[in-house]
Every structure is written in structure tokens, then in C-alpha cells.
Image (tube, rainbow, N blue to C red; front, top):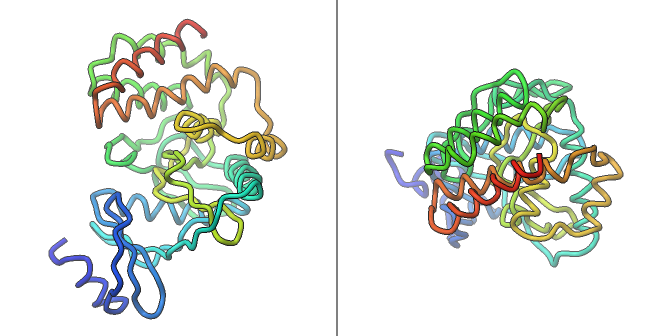
Length: 277
């Protein structure tokens, strides 16, 4: 941006006051009599598109409203949070299942969801990791491209290529869903009104089990959440092996971004998946 974000916000929304850093390039502030959140970075336009796409899915997880989105700057509404309850978990499970059950046109980018809305493409970022949002004709093609590209960037082609060769068996008749795409617990906010909001999406057309697998990788998925999800969208045969596949994706992202312990973790996950498939 050619100017600092407070200056830009002051021009369009009012002078920002009471700035509070939130981490991840985000800051909460007050302008025009309401608390908002500003986020800066290369991927914020993709994030804005994802938030709008998720918001358009009937009965899906609520998201912060997008007030301003331009190159390098995203401003959203602020989510008032409360203490996490069993009701939050149940509501989140139901809403996530409704998101994944909604019709979506294809894998990767370039899709659209049922009833209009026109989400024009998948995100080019998972967190700060660049990924290819190109559309793909089917699930094996989409995930093979994403897995192999990430593996090349962290030197794990030897472990990941055998996984890609098995994707036709692992994902034989997968249908696309709109998925959050970066759904770890840090991207879930327990709203004061009893609903769980999601933030920071890497939205794309993907497999409906992708989001749940990532949640489970970074913390246990409560029984109430999973039961509520299954009431709307029950698990299908082979889900346990596919969970290993969808855990491998974020492990590779972390291997690319951070290296270290994530390299052997991703390698082990790929080897386990080949053994099980």
C-alpha cells in the first residue's frame, strides 16, 4: 500500500482509535462508533472473497462482515467473543456440515456455489503459504497438484509422490464442496451469542472432509461437534484413511513455511497413508 492502513481507514471509514494488536497482521480499532478489525498482507483480497463466499452459504458458519477490501488491506466487523460452551460446539458442527453439503461447481478455483453468489476462484494462500488456486476436473487431479507442488518446495517428493499415485483410489467419487481451507482452532471464534465464527479462510472447492481433518490435527474435535456434523452429513466409507490424507496437506504447508519438525512429521504422515491405502 502507498499509505499506512490507519490513514486509509481514516479516509474511508473514520479516524481509527483504540488500536489493539490481535496478531497475524490484524489490529482491532474503533471508527465511526463501532469496533472493527484491519488486516494487512498479500492475501487479504483472497481472504475477503472467501469470507463473502462463506457468508453466502445458507446456514453455514457465520463470518465477520467485509467492510473494505483492497490491495493489501481488509477491514471487517469485530466479533464479540464469549466463553466456549457445548452449544457452541453443536452449532459449529451443524453449520460446518451445512457448508459442506451445499452444492459447489468444482475443485480448486473457478467454481460457484448453488443458488448464485459467484465465488470466482479459490484462494492463492493458505496462511502465508502461496498455493495454486487453478480449477481441476476432479478431486484426484486437484489434490495431486497441490500435494506435489508443496512436496517439491520442502524436498519431500519421494514420500509424497506415492500418495499422489493412490488418489484415484482414495477419492474415487468425491464431490466438491466449498471449504474453509485453513480451519485450525485459531481461526474459530466463540461468539458471545452462542455461534462459532470462522475467520482467515483459504476458501476453495475441496473435499468436504478437508476442514474436519485439519481441525483434528491441531486439537481434538469434541464429540458434540462431530455428532452434530454427522446428523447433517454422515461420514462415508474410507473416511479414516482420507483423514490421513487431509492431515498431510497442512503438514506440508507447515513444512514449507517453517521447516523443522514439520518435515519429518509430513514424511511420516505420507508413509502411513501409503501403508493404509
